[in-house]
Amino acid sequence: MAHLQQYEELLDAVKTRCSDADKQEIESMYQRVSVLRIVVGICILIALALAFVKQNMFSCIALAAAVVAFLLFSSQQKKMQAGFRSVMLDKCDPNTAVDRFVVFANHSSLRSWSQNYYNVGNALFYAGRFSEARSVAYVIKNHKENFTDAFYAEMLGSQLCAQAGDIDGLERHIAQIRTLSKDIKSSSPELRFLYSEALQLPRYAYLEMDHAYQTMYNELLEDDKGATMLRRVEKAYRLVGLAAKLGMREKEQEYRQFVLENGGTTFFKRELGGQTQLSLDLDVDDRVSERDAAAAAGEAEAIAVAEVDAVAEAAESPVLTAAQAETVPAEGAAE
Image 1 (cartoon, rainbow, N blue to C red):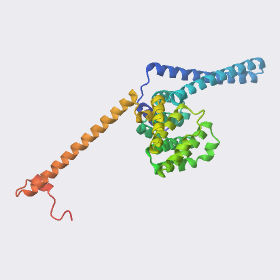
Image 2 (cartoon, rainbow, N blue to C red; image 1 turned 30 degrees about the horizontal axis):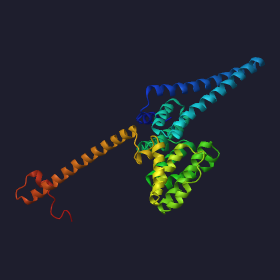
Image 3 (spheres, rainbow, N blue to C red; image 1 turned 90 degrees about the vertical axis):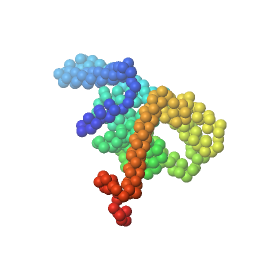
Image 4 (cartoon, one colour; image 1 turned 60 degrees about the vertical axis):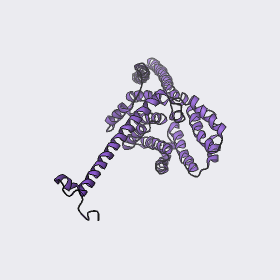
């Protein structure tokens, strides 16, 4: 695939804190699933070959072995997926989820590359690492090959625009997502769920624009029984701001405390004051970059001021050097 190199480069560029032990655990888990998948295929081929030569008894034995291997494969795959989901959805730890998804993406089939990319980008989003998440969305969008790839790119883009308050960008992404509705409605439950989530994003943005805070507050208070902890934390994070705008100080503190206690390594917790060590490290990196940029800007400004002063002094002097004369604009040049 044309995007293979960029796929690998971007995964390598994502900052991770995954220990060697965690990497080995994830890799061994993936290897078990891969081996079981191969065993299923081999057993089926043996069963077909035996059936072809009319060795029915042995063919049945091979088919039984294939069924057992398939059941083990399905069990291991579900266990692996549940473990990944638990870190993100139940423990609210997108920093660890980034590590796990990057390792998994490096070992999984390229057939599901856009889903792997979205998982990494989504974890980066909830960790508050928005610039890295944008890079992921950019690569998916520029290398999309089918409606699934296109959807993941637009979904991640819509999340980023909604968080940034970019209504125009959000509307563009949602418009693209709507064009995929026919394919998505006949696809996997995961895509259908994400599709319904995406369609809700503009509503909250419009209510915010209209200052319909009470309506937003009431809608968010709807029963979330069965919702993941990540969803509950996200709702509480939104309710903090709404309660503050509605003057509900006790509720604001209640929701804030819920986020601080359950927010894990999400940006929701960091923005409300409960920073984790990794978040602090990333913030320090950002501040260093901002400080360097500010210093560079200040130095450039100082140079520019010095040049202007030199021109002014030269203009007042009756005798100019050749270099000074070149910096003085000719009369009427401004006109």
